[in-house]
Length: 180
Image (tube, rainbow, N blue to C red):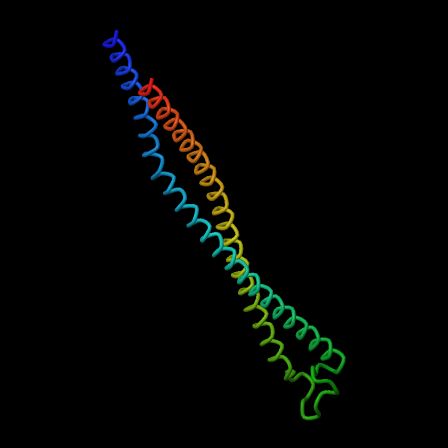
């Protein structure tokens, strides 16, 4: 009778040990993967913060360039309008007496310089808009990666919790079997 009981307890103990080994191996395999995902989440959060910061910096730069462009265009329009009112002179008044009709207006170089400045600012604006678009795309990609990795981390955390509860249950069953 005692031999049968010992054999039964021994078989139960071996079964419990076998059952404990599987969750323990899952647990040990899941931990490094979970830690790696947590590290990746932290990296993506830093990347997202950096992309957001750079995006705001480019937004400020973009606004500054737009303001400069607007101001330059207003100056050009104003000079042309004033020049048309005063016989071609952007400074006002009538054309200087020493300038004969058909001679170039001295305001033309200023206007040409202003158009060059408008062209330069337009190019800077296009570059800044391209940078903002690239950073926005990178930020969106980082947010997508972060969401996927967070979901994977949560899935592994659930597996880890399940494995831990199985281990606790098997240990409890083992203790019950050994004390019975």
